[in-house]
Image (cartoon, rainbow, N blue to C red; front, side, top):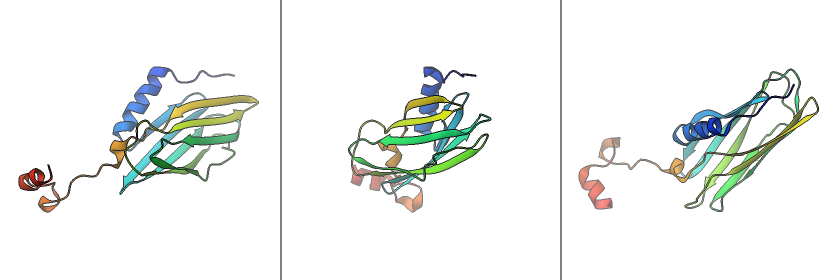
Length: 152
């Protein structure tokens, strides 16, 4: 049986949570649950993507393509072509920040299940703020008032 996709409101809520958090659901419907766990340090991002197959049949011809904004480089590695029935697969997306950028990477996710083709256009919630690091100083607790004023 066919299953409806996520509503626009659900997708907006998941994306909003992931902009502010390091892990959570990116997308979910009757076929799949896609979650991410991310870490960013020194201009480099590493995003673990988890794809859970919710069906009794395998997801075949699975593909995950990412299109990055100009000042962001990277891509997925280790993407499986099949996600077995009721199993979870995982792979990594790298994202290196080369400068200020606008927008988020666009994702095109496609697969087939029991002869039904599915295609999802999503965005990976990587924003320039993910690459910001706290200012050092004052014994590791942030800059002192004098250090802050000196930088500002």
